[in-house]
Each structure stands twice: as structure tokens, then as C-alpha cells.
Image 1: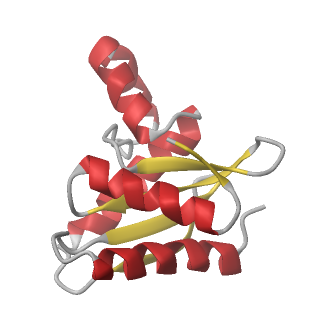
Image 2: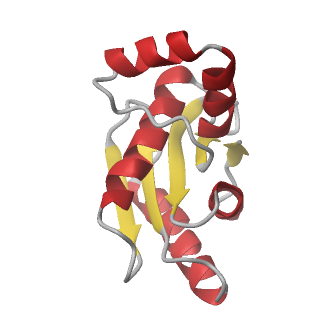
Length: 141
């Protein structure tokens, strides 16, 4: 189970790391559990308000499909009708864009996802991966 203390540590790591990198745009981070419920989120000053919903969409898609949002985006390119159908089943809340990383426990089970949004997808994903590693869990990007 992904608890609040761990989720907050992940988000705090992201926000702190982003603040140290002057070249990044304002970031938003969201952690959800394996059922898709938000555990915690933070938005840096200056981050656009829609970033929280965007992050939730990336995370929701990752957890519901068992794929990182990057891999889900790749699948959307290969099978656009399938991913659109899944998006319809998710009431339009699936965002297949890199930045959403599954969080796995020591046994390899998916216990949630973390998403970063605000800069390039590669920078978003890099921050997410580092944050998951910082709490001794396994990121699946």
C-alpha cells in the first residue's frame, strides 16, 4: 500500500528538485494509489491550474492500464482506436503523454503512480523516476 507519508515524500522530492533547476517551468506533481484515487498533489507557484487535472489524467491512465503514460502514448500511436475506447471507458480522464510513472513495491506489484507535468515530458518523467527511487520504491517508466 502507498501511504500518505510516502506519497508526500515523493511529491516533496519532485517540488524540491524542480526548484533547484532554474531552467524548468513551474511543476505540478500528483500521486495516486492503485485504485486511481489521489493521495496528494502540489503545484508550484506559477503553474497553470489545469496541470492538476492533466497530472491526474496521466496517472489514472497509467494505473488503469498498468503502463507508464509514455508507453500508453506509444500505444495510442499504434492503436489509436483502442486507446480512444479506453479513454471513453475512463470518462475521458486518460492522458497518454509521458510523465506518468507507475510505482511498484519490492514484489513488483503496482501500488500507485506519480505524475509530473509542467515542462517537457522527458523532464517531467525524469523528476518522477528520481522521486520514486528516493523512497526506495521502483519506478516503471
